[in-house]
Image 1 (tube, rainbow, N blue to C red):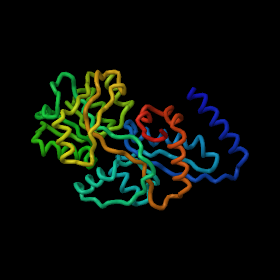
Image 2: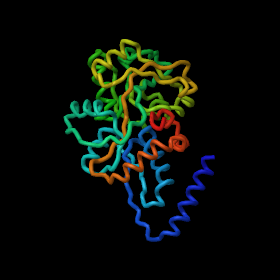
Image 3: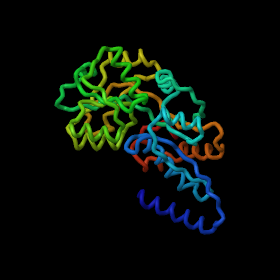
Image 4: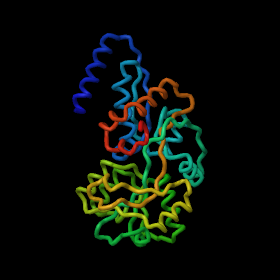
Length: 290
């Protein structure tokens, strides 16, 4: 069905473009994250649906890979990014305060998916809660990322002392976990996630919950987070919902972006949710269009 829909839209666009040789295309970008993580899946899915509806009107959306939310804020400020996926303003302020970076002004276009603190561990490592990470090799995400800053602050506050803390992005992390080179990966990520689905099916790994005390501790050091649950129906390997914390995620634009582009993007998000769902499971968690 998806292939048929795509073919019809492509055919319509081809015919319309053939009738309008002088059409000038205005390109704009959405900066996202690693290609194997949720930010890129979101940006790419939005662009695919947008282009099917509006390329023939002279607007083209391009998804761009980046290092994530903190970098995206800088790119919005410099104007290199037209739109970008970022974590909630409170979470970004936390990153900025800890990394000693400047606050960047941006326009919030829409709230999109939430990001859950996700704890992926080796099944044979006897890790059942965060305190079990003492003397383990733990990946907390790329240096300077919000995940790395928040999780490191939690470790310091809770006196958790891993054997080694490493800072890998999503792409390398999946391979390192499957190769048993690291014991655990503690990271904020959107779900359901195709990368996680793959490693849970193929590798000897499991997801674990936060205890109530751990949830409370995260909310104490980072009160902009929210108590939440990762739904068991997101992955067939889960026997129950997982207790965790989450942050809000937004699609934001640079201040002087063409308002027509913002209007059209909002229309896609609000009125084309069913079509967005054909672009990936991550859109199941979107609060928009309901």
